[in-house]
Image (cartoon, rainbow, N blue to C red; front, side, top):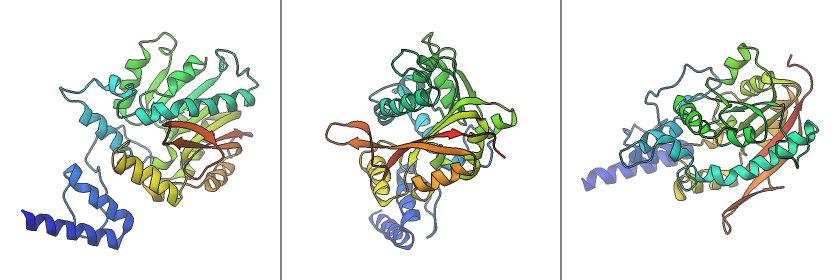
Length: 314
């Protein structure tokens, strides 16, 4: 047994030396009880999951860690799905901690764009907003409470079920329309929204340009688009992947692929090609001492951008 483990460690080391990024994935395989392959990149989570048939912009094997996490949490000793997603001390604690900061940026940007009063209780009254990649509804519900008519979409059916269950418990959020679908499918249905929001989604799609085209097509003329993501920097690799996934274990291992990240400059150019002009961008920074997130000028790791659509997509 010891000799076998030593052989496996040697194989892991050779894989890591041959390719740093694929090596990291192979090093993770034991924890998920996946079979080791010869020295070549190993893509985790290829097991079939209960998804809708997806368009080519959605990379299912990157989305799979979230569904896998939910599956593991569904055990006799674990709380129901809805309680897990909405447990502020549970696996999604980082999203809950970051959410007030993201909402602050969205509230400020959309109020300026649509000339709304940011100090009133329901500043988004009369606005149609879509939350693309809504997960369990952590962002959709605050948007609804601020008066927006919200549609939340996600390609993982379990997430949609969770979101529906939780939203029904509050009259202010029970009107949210949750759908298990994709942005591209809604484009085919000629859907339009005053504001299109996609937070922490673009780094999980196979073709960011096509994905942004779908977001732009869903945005009504003179509407607004808000996107947040992780920048492709070595500092982001160290914090968003090494620290968040392997050291702090905030996220399932393998959730992010550094090579799939976009720099803020790349995102601006992609959006410009879809008739979305970026008007504002901010960093979302984490303070490890206080454990709090805040908006900042540092866009080297997490960042959020707001853009305005000028006319229809060609």
